Length: 464
Image 1 (cartoon, rainbow, N blue to C red):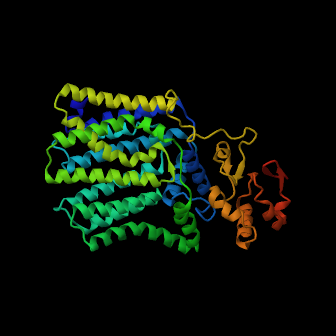
Image 2: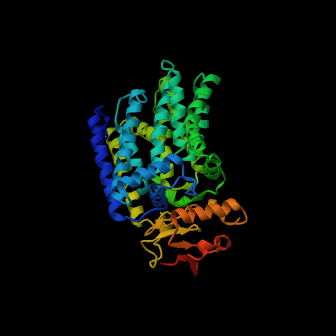
Image 3: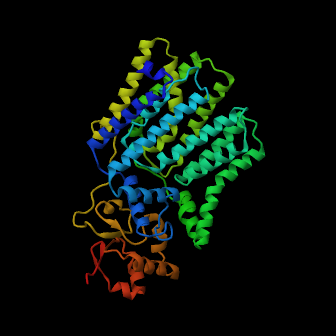
């Protein structure tokens, strides 16, 4: 297999696509159960397609480009998983091919090879959720574009203002998909400061590029007189809301065991055997620095899942490909590549199936919603996403933490008005309200108090 991919022939990429399709089919066959990020994306997309305005009529912290992409995918696929997974596979394939071509164009290795495309694709098979159409997947593509511009800037022959401006724009757009990706802006400036003759003017160009997409969004919400709401529910919420992990570190360690072992081998091999030009040495250091920046971002991400680690895939691909290409004995190199491919595919497949006890996806998977509530328009005032599995979102409240600042202050007139507008626009058939947050609001809204009756932890609308 190694010999096959060492040829500089783009048709070798078709085999990479075939591997991704087989892996995706395997993951989909074993289980079709939704994960929390998937369901959340579907709910947001449905709400936007119902005519609600993000942040104003959907109380949530989801990044704006992610929200609008969720709306688009809901229009195309509804809640269907097959179409979403096929698009995700195609995006992973594009990322793998693009990164391999990027390395070839920048002469990162002593030979032109499409091996990095294979390594990139196989690394994305570590966990089934890499094959979900997610914000990190989309944002990681923009980061690859940014990385290409960093390489261009390091190569002194190609230094243009638009390179730096576009670099900032790519990272800015990525941060509107996953907010914590703004960390790559800081990391990029540090890397360029270390490895290029960067000036304050160049830093300013990068910052202008980064702020440009943010400024466009601020102007959009300013035009609708919702700037404050946008700041509170996107910027402040993503900074202030608590972080949590949907998978344990032991599970992540098991999923990443094979890549980590090969990465360790690659560091040893590169330091011992590799002979670099000055430019190649700079690229290696940049890729290692990019890995560190990605790990810092992962430490701050709000919902840590296996696919949160997609930002380290380019760096791991770079080093592991180096390791495989530096092995002098062809037979050993072939065995090493086969062990890498088979090890990751088997770990990913058995982990999804549940055969490896050390890998626990239970926090990621969505539990079944109460069987008595189905095909209803519902609103939950608690952190209870499973209620939306068999139901559609009504009302305005999606994120429990953000909602509580409104629901616990019924004495403020604007909060009462918001609850009234919530019912006027999209009155839920069922409201899950364990703490009875709504009671003081309904006392102030007699029209809606007549519409609902409390049964246990639910408010149910009286049928007419």
